[in-house]
Length: 531
Image (spheres, one colour):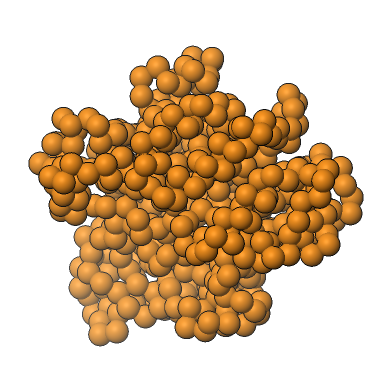
């Protein structure tokens, strides 16, 4: 087990502030020596259920001869628990782990203890979920707004261009999507300077970790139930996370609305999917709780095995498909040939419920996020003034690169901006000096490629100490966290059947890392400890 030096780490003491001295140290393991943390009170929890918990900050000093058993024992117990309860992914060192279930399993990367979050901010994020669900649906119905907003991006971004071509064809054919299903995730960070919760992005396609996020929450509940007295933590402050059951319920209701009991849910997957168990948890819940069967196919397989019948019915391998659930198709890498684009178009032409439809997919692009943040644009889609106020409060600074004052400011002070392309998944954003270099190049070249990006205010969350476990090794890092709130929206014609907040995802990463994807190797799964 490895540990590194740090300045502070947040844990909690179960006694009132004046009586915390008996929990004055926390021990953690180092290969060469032991370290201790001296506790100091930083404030009381604002908890509706008063559990007597007080947050304390641990400052590290060197002190030989102290026990390191606590952390060692917790890590060992956690690794065993993950293996027994399905908190697993495929091993990147075993190619078959992305193809054959049950082969090459390793534990999903996780944080040993949950991250603390003020209860008020968690409630704020949850309340925003249903507002964003409705906003996505309303924006998706305005095809000309989507086409116009993305028109310049289309000229320089081949991937967005192909998506818009499919969308335009659906508009021209007057294709009606009576049953509309969205499984979304809105991601936030808590800014350290302002203590405001800002939206990072809204994911409308392939929102991952509804399965594993539930399990890591139960891991933390288990650890705190066993070690809470040692840590000064109370598992009552861990919110329940129903994401897997609520996502499955939304899919099953869409299946019911389609009204074909013999049909299946088609899960569109990538060819090598190490995160398949997060998906299998959802499929298993669908079958066991709702008696809905699923089949998994890549876009390549759908192109060769799928057909749309004259009445619009989608069949894959002879099975009628009621719902198409995309866990792929969000990246240019998912379309290596024309076959995959033909498959995407085939799916859109069918009468099956798409999750998401091409219009929902486009609403989730960075450019649309930036357009919605402009003055008076939300009013085009939302009538409720209180809802508009809540949405605007969550928007970070967002600018198109037409705004040369902002571009020049970003060149001068690149550390305060993030340059974002129209891409999903980790590893695409541009930070620091690379922001300046990229903007200078685009400016000097007078390149239309500038339309493929947006600028976003960079959020600086408060750092805290965390124990991040990956590949069986626990490392102590200064870390920051990102909160994702799952949402589900389903309507049939004018009837809204589901508009729910569906649980949460927390991803924690070393503060030295810019990107934050778990599957892409930057972050670990985490849960919430409400304060």
